[in-house]
Image (cartoon, rainbow, N blue to C red; front, side, top):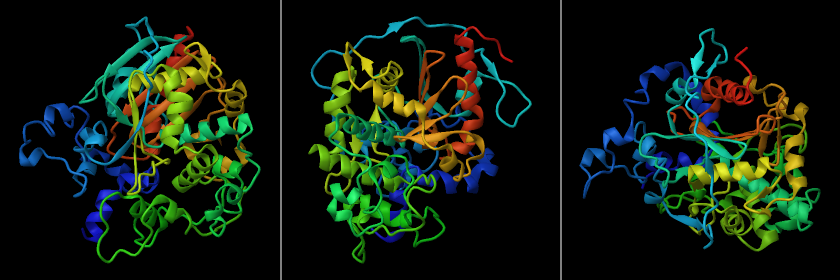
Length: 445
């Protein structure tokens, strides 16, 4: 495989980083993509047949999995395309949702950001290429819909929602006393002592305030994001490849830039480094630890899974895949201060710390125009709005939104052609807030 083919094949493995640069390049030309109905992967028949027709085959090694509209099939079928590690749900039966479906949600109206034309909830689903969405209110399923090839029994890429699970695991270990967030990363992973991570604290990893050199400029072939993605790619490397061959090897090469603890910088490499810390402290990789401490205790309906590099290291920054209902279960557990399925899964202090949020001053320096007043804590995004909402976010429209005041949890999977949330937020964030008001009995302002 040559370098060009390798780059095509590793775009996904670079995680959320792709979104920022890609959004700027294509947001103004979004109309070139077929809409949600025209790009429906079930209608287009990707990978159907024994074998599928040659023009309907999707592959990882040639990068076709990442092209649009093939992407809409890929995101619900990653396990068919790349090596993975299981996240076991255990052997106990699943916890049960009460279903109190409502027929009034599709008509909920909201005003998209920077728009003077109202939109309905159901219109927003198509606008954002939604593959599946579920809404819980007071623990009951009040809304659930699937599109394309995603089914209730299917699994979908969570993208950078994965980071939130890793951050939550780190917060759990910290609450139990086995991990000290104020200690330096090198205290736990001596292999990172000579890297930029070595002098950072674990807390700075958890809140992404490290000063590391990690360019995500895809126009620059020497940008660190390419080295990160190439290292994590499980495919055989080109004969002339001389770079790191695993996530661990890459992390040891990261150089300093700026000052630790000075500003929020959203960089996938931070989560990979935190995953290494968590693995070293617990004696389990993040997939095994997630199964042991959360997934097997939730009463999940399905196993989850994570993509891995060539030595089996789970991609902490974006490799988690799961069923939609199980993502909602996780959200409901967090909404209930860590208690779910008859047990305290997370210490309540972990959830309280997340809800308090991080430094808004540090966050503001990142310049997110649509997220003014937000902060970032334990790899959760905290809105600090009137309802105290907080969320997990991933490229192409993955989201877990928790509104404590409205007693509401929204879990959504999507396959938007544009990766960055800056394109998706204008018709997602106000929709979530409008639905919260609706469920609380408040009218559209």
